[in-house]
Image (cartoon, rainbow, N blue to C red):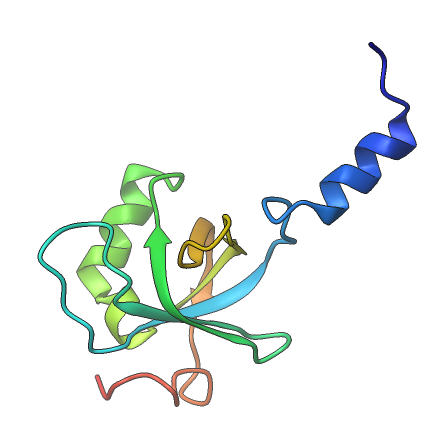
Length: 117
């Protein structure tokens, strides 16, 4: 069976897994868990201001060096880095933030929704 390109594009645009890449800040939301995945983060899209509370950040697609940089700076707690990526919702599950890169250090204004740090 052959699908026409227009149908495939329409399907991808409608799919919850085909979210657009953007710039995001990830901050701790205070929730504590006993096992992963733990939705202990809030993710904010810097372009739209849209917040995704109870999100699980996935940094596994980043290089080992970038993963270590995130750990060393507590970037997922204090929102110290602007990350590129996308938010995916799969059914009724909590949203996941899929990090695909580190864009830059966050400004004080961008971190204003995060805990002090």
